[in-house]
Amino acid sequence: MSISYFRTADTLITGKGSINQIGMEARKLKGSKVLIITDKDIREMGLIWKVVDSLEAMGLNVHIIDDVVPEPPFEILEEIAALIKEKGYDTFVGVGGGSTLDITKVLSVMMTNEDDVREMVGIEKVENPGVPVILVPTTAGTGSEVTPIAIFTDTSDMVKKGIVSPFLLPSVAIIDAELTLTVPPSVTAATGMDALVHAVESYTAIGANNLTDSIALQAIGLISRSLRQAVYNGKDVQAREDMAMGSLLAGISLGNAGVGAVHALAYPLGGKFKVPHGVANSLLLPFVIKYNIVGNLEKFSDVAKAIGEQVEGLSLRDAADRCVTAMETLSKDIGIPASLKDIGVTPTDIPALAEEASKIDRLLNNNPRWLTVKEIERIYTEAYGEEEAFSETIV
Ligand SMILES: [Fe+2]
Image (cartoon, rainbow, N blue to C red; front, top):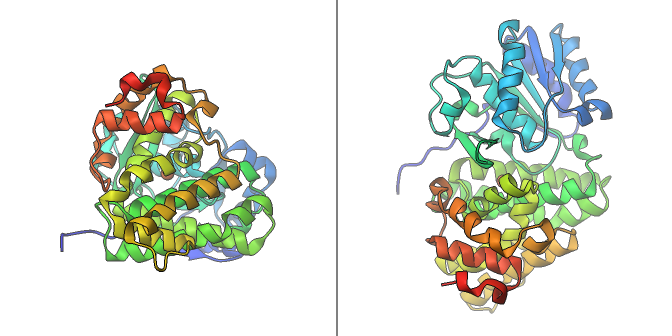
């Protein structure tokens, strides 16, 4: 057995009403001056006030910054860091979707490291731990509250870049499904599919191990069972709880086993076409899985089973194939675009997208089947849906 590490948040708190524990947790971290980082929507919807009330009830001094933007560029980190650097905040609380949580994690280490944030891009380039962080996701999908990864857009080349460091794991993550009840259907669909991709990719990744396998399979089961219901009946508390737990488990699995080619091919779409991360992942998922299946038939047949497909009596190959059709149906049922055409990609964009994706070694080296740039082009081409329109680019 090869050496592997298993890391997650120091403390995980889950369940209905768990948000009310936040004041107590900040107290345990010896916090006195707390900065809440969020976006304007969350602030306007009033989701933030439960957090503020709980913190203030413990006698803590609370300030809020609501400057977070979706798919954030590095510049936003520099802007917020300049505003808060001399203020002496001793605890950071991130309340929001993946962008907010990623920003909070990185701001924490920017307070304790001299390096320019762009020098932190890559694996384990952060020298010192940051100030204590509490993360509260308000969507069920990114799993950012339990991953050592944060993703930002580099506006110089419009490429998404990742900072990976154990110092990005928070002291506390609080997962309260009640905070997700008002998430609109389109966001529920996109973030939910992102979580499913995390579970499927980490389960079939080279970096998977016994610990992550059982967690990933549970996540696939919960998400497959409840995503449609969470999209079409957002007030269904049980469906929202399944999605919150599924997303958390998928995040823990991804944080330790890593993900693969779906994410590698999705990042250039997010950077260049501003496609939400979950939509890009979901759109590519069936096409990448179709390619990957022969890399690990047994595991893909497990995925089909965990999704709820009837695989008894089928050959391993046929059972594995069932996971592709199941994912296509799920994606269609919840209204995710089915083709790259739907998000504005043209055939002439594909070679450059493939070139960009082929550079993301961190993810491609973890994929269950080896990919060359030509094979990446072929997958984008299939996801575009008109192979004959640019068949000259296909091997
Ligand atoms: Fe993701």
